[in-house]
Image (cartoon, rainbow, N blue to C red; front, top):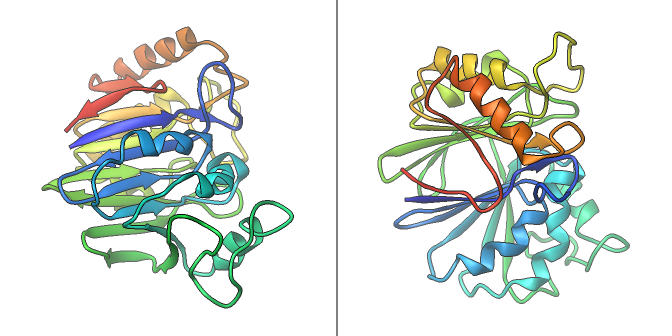
Length: 254
C-alpha cells in the first residue's frame, strides 16, 4: 500500500508545496484525504478502476480549492466524496456558480463533469463504506473532522487541522500511520485556531502508541523553506523517533 503526498502546505500554495492532498493506493481502494491544490495530480496515479473515496476534513479554502478542478478528471468509476453530516450545504455553496461550474440541484450527483461525483454525509464514529472508517470532530476553527481508515489490515489516521483534543485519541490510538498537521513552529504562544507544532505532535504520537508519524500541513508563512521542515522533523524525532516531515512528492509504503 502506497501513500502519496501531493500537497503538504497549509494556508496557501508556495514554492515549498501545494495545499493539502494525500492519496492512498491500496489493493482494492483509492483513498484521498482533502482536496487542496495538490489534488490536480491524482490522475497521474489513479490508473486502475478501483473505487475512489475522497474525505474532506473541513471547508477552509486550502482544503477544498481543488473542487474547482473536478472537471479535469475522467474516472469511469466515479468519485465518492465524504463529508461530515450537515455539511452538504457547504459543498453545494462552493461547487456552484459563481465559484465554479454548477451542480444539479436537489441531488447528490454533480452535473457538468466527466466523472460522476456522489457526495455522502458521514456520521460521527464508525462507518462502513466498503472498508471501516472512523470519523471524529477535532479542535479547529469552524469544525474539522479527522479520519481513521483500515485498509489491507493497516490503520491510517489523518488529522486535517487540529490541536490535541480528546477525540484525537479515537482516531489515533495504536495506529500504524499517523498523518498529522504541523502548522506551527515550536512556540509557547497559544494557537487560538487549533494547530500544532512538531513537539506537540510528536508527543501526541508517542502518547497514542502510533507506529509512524508523518508531519504535513506546514504553515506556508512559517515554513518558507524546506530546510525549516527538516528542523521540525529533527525536533519531533527527539520525542518520537519514527517521524518524517512530508514534502510534495513523498511516497511511503506501509
